[in-house]
Image 1 (cartoon, one colour):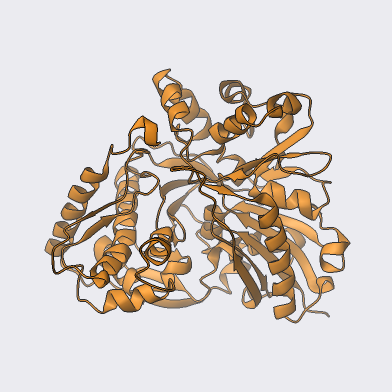
Image 2 (cartoon, helix red, strand yellow; image 1 turned 120 degrees about the horizontal axis):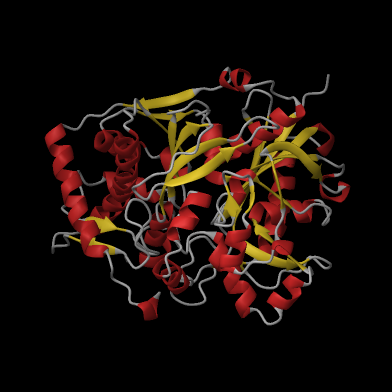
Length: 502
């Protein structure tokens, strides 16, 4: 029997990649390319949808070539994506009406402020499990309709389509035959009722978004269509779609209530599985749909988001120029025993959970004449662990959950120094899997379940391998002191940007 594989498309915030997985969940081929980050003005972040599509197709073909297989051996395609980034395109031509507005973008801060002042937060919170924040898709979509000439009129006539990046990729893969999104991505838009399982008419009216724009919502693991034969030499079923952080939760096989993971990517994202019932937080944690496998009940999660994590390391490279590659940050940070008293709060685009302050801005404190670039590098890694600790402590405290260990993934989790910092600050073991690409693996698992490559969760668990477990070494006294100093630094970064600069 010919061996079958899964092609996972992982369209991230700063790079697009593709990975071919075999039936044991191991990587057989991969390819990746960074793409352009567009900053039209302060607080605005955009991506070129055509560049995303061209590069995603290129790396998908590259991964298949690297795996030394052909399209006929690919059993299915799974897609995972940056979630809240949204775009609008012409249904007839497939041409975007403009750039995609990225989840990091803060241009709709004023709109969110007005909606909050008008008392709409309780409705949004109850229907979606989310908060009124520029992070999510709805206000970005309204901005496009209001600022692109003729867009709103064309949308109301049914001439345009809108979606998150998963929808865009499926549209292009299928030649426009399918306009769909899955429940996990839909739940990040501020337009989807997570209890009713459908777009909310109340929220569509609130954000002035015509229903005609939106995709059909489908389960996470199900066959939704086929890619055109011209892309990979043969049609391939598209059988998995899932937002990147939910995908990492599933890729880490946190499939039981109370299991949790943290992904260190462009941002940092902590998710905890809460089972088949949504848990609404009183402390600004997000309730989100985790996934839906076929016709099984929807699985929910609670989430805390850190906006800037790996992006802070990129800033050391591209902004400050103190490293030439992202990997150098570890060697530089390890060249000093501590941060020399430096605290770095990388609030470049505001702060997420548990603060939710879009006006916070990046802050470096504790600089002296003795501060060198190595201290800043170490403080940058430290900030990733500190921000994650804030989120995890809030999550466990509110839910009354004692976290036994944390499963981690994402590019920065390759850093032993970072994960030791995380274990020390949390006071619990941190577990790194053998396959760090948990986000892509989750999408692959979803697609593979839909086409029968894997039978069930137990089948998936039988393939999981752990690379290393980091045990906490820090004393309680030192931990308390470091967290208290961090809180002081965060307080100084809050409420910095004025309305004119957001």
